[in-house]
Length: 460
Image (cartoon, rainbow, N blue to C red; front, top):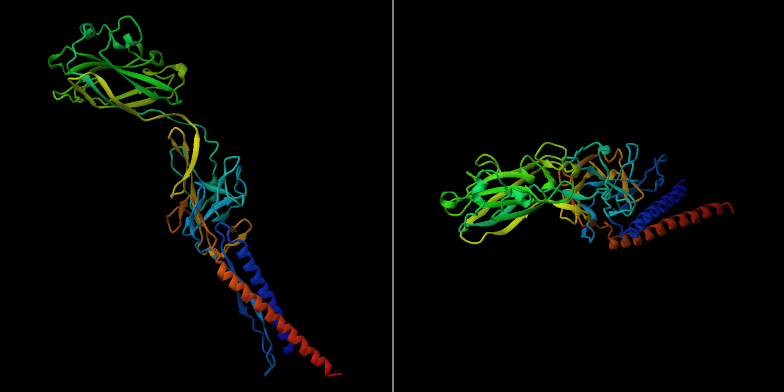
């Protein structure tokens, strides 16, 4: 009966517009939710079979929900270094727990990058989802697997321990006095019967040097050590040669074949213009040998760090290229060295490549993990779940995890957040339209009721 179909069409209008109102309500409520993607209910007509010629049966309307997951929200600057946004396609991979994530734990996907560090050191967003990433390996690289989510783990920036960097390079800028007189002890030194290392250690048979340069080092445990480079002017022709030794201060820090912690002994030669002649310098063995002091680990072979110190092996490269011999007083201009003592974490940094790093108060930076970006052929087909997240679905297609900015994946924007895609003016306009459409559908039911009432009254 046509009147009955008209009433059912009105009911379908009420149901469809109720769904539209629900979607608009969700959108308005989430206008300030980070990276929220608006939903919309579109309408499609339903056509029934016209069984009787000349009569029309109303089919009504059906509501079809559409989500705009792929729509990019505005990227806004944030004051937190752990706030992240994705500029372009893709999602952060997250889980519901931080520690002990297994292959059986569900991985979900979100663009809500309002991450902060929880009490256990995990990066967690406002919806209590834990950020996943590829952990750094021992060689400083990342095992990037595009399809295995189990290769990723919850990113923890707390249990990293202190950072130490042993000294590997020392640069020395100094001048030796070309006009200095030859020491009285130089003749005895030339015979090999004495050493400047013994003098520094207050051991008999020592010769006082003309000039000493002390260098502070950091060992593998973060401890501070000291090496000294001592010079004694040689009574050679042209006066361009100096005897030189390198030794530990105190001598007990090292064990070596030489006297009193001596690690190197030979001559340093200068050109006539006062520049150093590294080709003929024999301080490190043969003429022109690399300027490197090699110390084996405690318990190793000489020369080594003393066994009781428990220090790892260490190679120290010396840059002597700016040592000069000019006719002015012997002086140290500068000593530069790398390495850093024990440091504690003071900040967490994330770069555009998605690398999460811990910054220490000794200027060291330690990589922790690399954030992967999950992409889908049809991200609008993902299944929404609570917490502004999504689950993979057949409609979304096969997921691939990519590095930031590669293979079509969006680039991570650190210290930023993605805004909601809700436009309040559009939502309020839709609210008015939905209200009017709902009222109109209810009027269909009222009119159909009146017509049925007239039909019933015919019998009376």
